[in-house]
Image 1: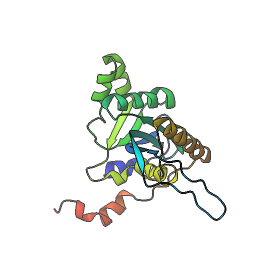
Image 2: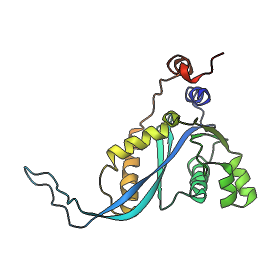
Image 3: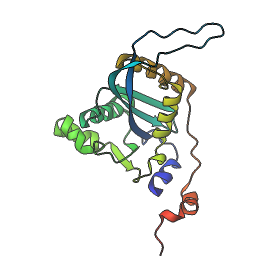
Image 4: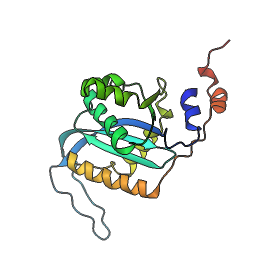
Length: 206
C-alpha cells in the first residue's frame, strides 16, 4: 500500500510516466421493441424486455499527472488481450518513455508472462524491460486511480443499454476524447502518513 501511495506523490517525469491500469466488463443489451423517444412532457421510455448480446471487456489506462486516459473495448479478457493492450501503451502512447511506472491489481493475466505468450521472446523481453510494475495489495483496489476513472466512465457513459461492441467503442471513444480535451487530472490527497493513522488496524502490532 505504501509503495503505491508514495508513487502517487512522486514528481512528474515524462521519461518515467505514472500510469494506472484496470479492466472491467459490461453486458451488451439490445432492445426487443424500439424505445419510445422523448417528447415534451415525456421522458424516453424503454421496454422491460431486452436481449443479451454477450459481454464486452473494458481496458482503461489513466495518467493521473498528465490528465490522459485511453480505453480499449475487446470481446474477451485473456492474457493475449492484456499483452496487446500493454504493447500499445509502450509503443504507441508512450514510445519515448524510458519506463512506464504501471499501477494495477494482481490479476493472473497482469504479468510479464502474458507478454511472452503473445510475442516472440526478444520482443516480450524488450516490452517487459520498459515496465516498472506496482501491484495494489489484496482488497486494496481502491488505491488504483484507474478504478476511480472506470466508475466515472460507468456513470457518465455506460449507465444505459448498449447493444453491441461497435456502439460501445464509439461511445467510449467520444467520452475519452472529451475527458482528454478537458485534461482532467487526479489530485490524490491520501498519503502514507494518513494511512498509518486511519488504517492503523492493517499494520502489524509490534
